[in-house]
Image (cartoon, rainbow, N blue to C red; front, side, top):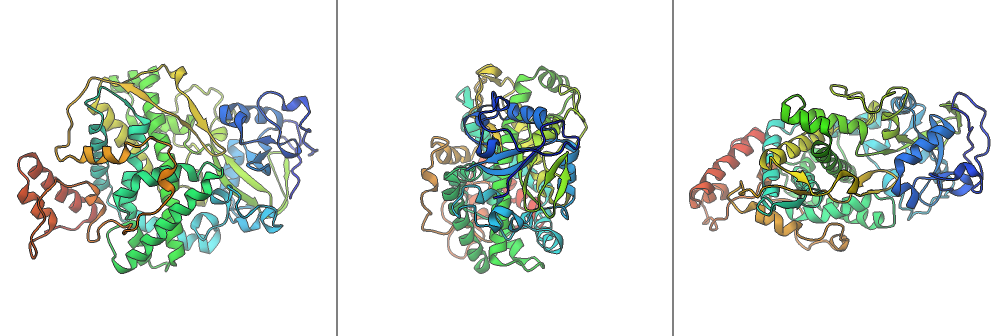
Length: 524
């Protein structure tokens, strides 16, 4: 295992020396000592105050600090904005290829380490650089870009309406557990090509997969098995979804490459978008600047989203880069094969670029929330879209919504990679449901389980995992109940439209419009 030594000055080229031992007073307070005296990015202290740990490390080490991950695995945490940009933009110095990680090369990391799902090598674009990265990244970019954004906005809003319908008559709700936690996954499962019944299970699995603990391995197996089955099904029955488009792309992805990129989109987009929705909702409901501006017409929801991306990026620490050669960064001597972690929230709050952390960042998108360089998040516009529509729809449907607790009473849970709210209880004047087809009741039955239960990842269903073929993602919106269409009749959508009356008939027309808007094809 590479021994990480660090200077203890300001990070301005100080000669490195052995980090203080666990008994040293320098480790009192925020940073609990790990192996060799390194500050742990996991455990009780890290979970209770990750921002305090970053501030402590910045004061002690400067822009780059030695840390310990789960199992006391050593790494470098990049805290400075400029240093984060340098690492993210120079893959020839800092590669994403974990096969160059010294600990892996020496066989020091256990094969069942819970770090593997987040930092281990996989045949995806995140784990590659150079020509192979460009081949895989082009498949992801091209496939995501085929989805019509106007059509996506329509069915995102429809899902948001349905979820709000599950609690709008109650006058109170947990906006995290009943809304933010489920909206992104309902959108993503249908975009990827999975049956919507898998959304609640995948919510729990995706949350567990990014924790960096023992649960991550079981959750990762569940996700991998589900997506492997989907890829096999789409070879036989292609559909208008991301799985089929990756399979058909000219880059010639293998089945494993298709599966891992579906996993990448699902896990990365889900957890970060859920956190972004929750944090943005909390901010517009509690921060006087945004609440007053929103009601006064000076601040839009997209502006609020960008402020949150500066102050509380959903991914606080981004895994991982590996030094390709001995080099210097932020005054620290980095050895070839060392692992580096991008400190996104630390970089965003670097005093060098934000001397006043309370200043508004309205109109400024230079944050690190989606990383930078060739590995910048390819689906960031979709995450922004789901968040903006989700928050905007909530405020429109429940105009007097307010938190049931004070902001100081809200609690958070953190891990190495992220920090998220435990709940977001709110009160409002009860409202009538907006969707007349019972879709809200259908979703309510799926999300009624207690959030955080791990039973959902214990087993796979015996049936098919894919959504019905011949249907685009817009058809993820549940249709009105109708009698079965007789054999030889027109499509089920038309049969439903003929059987429905009143509001249901109008909804069937809207569904066909969603289909046309998303896929560019008419449905007759």
